[in-house]
Amino acid sequence: MITALDHIAIAVPDLEKAIKRFMEDFGLPFEGTEDVESAKTSTAFFPLPPTSIELVHPLNGEGPIAKFLEKKPGGIHHLCFRSDDINADVARLKEKGYQFLSDAPSPGAHGCQVIFIHPKSCDGVLIEINQPAEDHH
Image 1 (cartoon, one colour):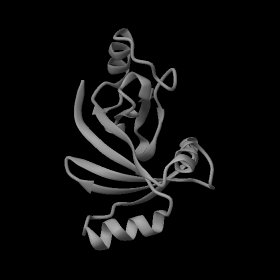
Image 2: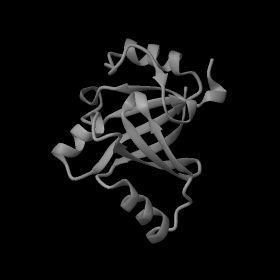
Image 3: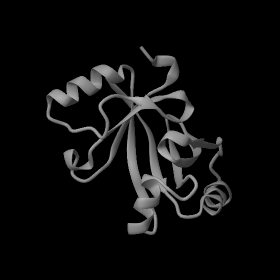
Image 4: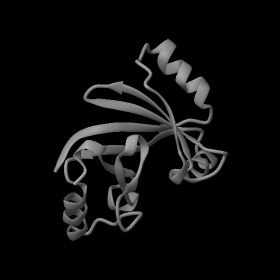
């Protein structure tokens, strides 16, 4: 079951500059950065319980965020919903005809299990579903 809006991800061309903006200009609490090799992204998290803002930047200048930034100067990249049973949610949504970008959830930031729904299934919005490590079945 979907239990929360886990985070809103914003693609940024300059990660350090964006971190500074959210920390200094907006005064948000900064949780730190994490490189997610499998997704080819560098991430920075600003928790705003019960959700957070995630800045995403290409790791080593490659991957899906690099492609996104070739087309746009930056902007909202995806919404992520938190799940307490990701496999059940994926099965339920597949039955309803949603198309996913992968066959099964894979490891993401913070040790979560993550999967993405194809934007064409959601009016052009890329939706991620994640399950925090402590909830993983």
